[in-house]
Length: 465
Image (cartoon, rainbow, N blue to C red; front, side):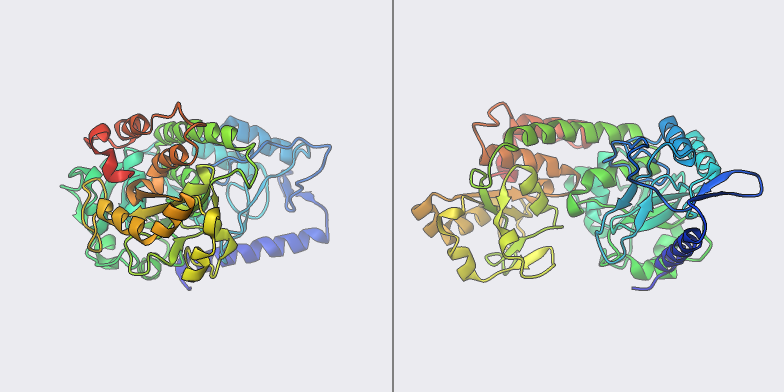
């Protein structure tokens, strides 16, 4: 797909490669006219050098030690890299055909690590919401190195999962536009009253003239594979706002990555960190309790794509977010044994499902009735459960296979952690007897869905049946 942003990324990639080629004919560092040392080829595995723990979820270039914070420790780490005392951290996600290797110490993305990167990190740290805009480089949902102008004050969301991120971050006061589906989300509780709605029937290609008329600082959306390519081509070159910011909101088990990174861009790091820590506490507990289970001991599960015409043969696979929710809850998802395509929705033969026999412990269908249990594709959540129980009764009667329904409202996106809790309780009731799923769900709503009033104890059967 061709668009302005991708062309720019390719150009940067060429510069980096060219710089690396030049360097190979010289040394791994050199000095410019002012005497500043420049590291053009990264060294990542020198045992004599310090190596940061890494593994962080803040995918901002300049986060040199690759933790969850951009701070003075990154300045210190970049200096150690320049001095030959620390190894660089490279972020090589391999997420898509657009993925690149991100040099986390190269804050200004010029293909080298130097004093300029230290200055850049200091500038980013010192910035306030009223500071002049500066270029901020980040690794996006596709694993590509992308750029936005920081700081951002206003945002448009073109996709409901990104809107859910904004709600979780308490950022709706910064949102000046959303897609039609987002405007109907029950938990937004009328927060769009003074905001315009994108004049478009599709989240994939929202109307460019409407967005350009509003002049938001950023347009938050998803992968290039599906979203906003026509919009991006229509936006003027050389702009310092209306950046198309591609953030993981459900893909690849990177919800925490996307939310922490988006929170930084919006100056809401404290709220993003609160959300990530809340999720970590639950995920760490689940990991601790299930990590010793063998493959045979793990619950075997399938997650049908609920309430679609081909629901009985279409299952959520890797990158769907829903597959990742089941895995995070400690299950072994059987769809990995029959990946008929690279699509997030995997279509299989009915005979394959029937052939699983007593290996299939549980079926958790992801459905779409939402908090208000609306009818979707002709069925409410409860009606869909009855339909699937009837369809799979041979499994339930012969093998004791359990059938559950989980609404997509907690099946993916920032609320996926609630789905993880319910699934973990279903999969391993003895291991997680201390989990009060309804109570934790209510806590999530109270903390991360400001303004929305929903009594989980009275209505949880609408969401997790």
